[in-house]
Image 1: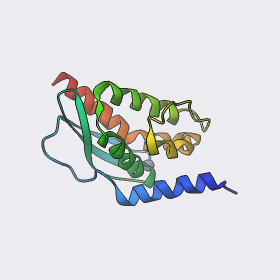
Image 2: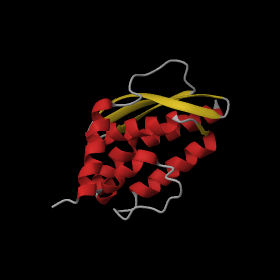
Image 3: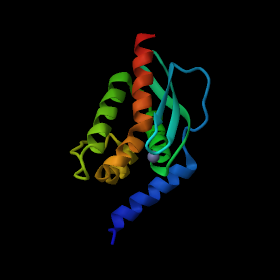
Length: 149
Ligand code: ZN
């Protein structure tokens, strides 16, 4: 039925949806955004943390399906490495391309998306793309608010 890589990816998604890295809203944030995905019932609030041009992490609180929660956890790990604002924008754009690749995946150098690549399979199911994108859209919106603040 499914190939071994698919089940490995599913395991990573399940682990992240349980562990929820970055969950729990923290103080001292640059900006905050809230996103809803009514078709699935997913909901998330994301706070963007950092100083100057450096984004040092997100904290978030949400509820929803395992894909939306795992995606937020994976994104938290990715940003936790510390990114410039332009690097953050690039990664969000890259992830959006991955989510809209309809299962074909994308070309990427140096694996800038880290574990987020495990969500590639989600792009085969158009109804679930919003679940995968939820935390990323909230982060993008928060970054835009931080920009104008
Ligand atoms: Zn969902």
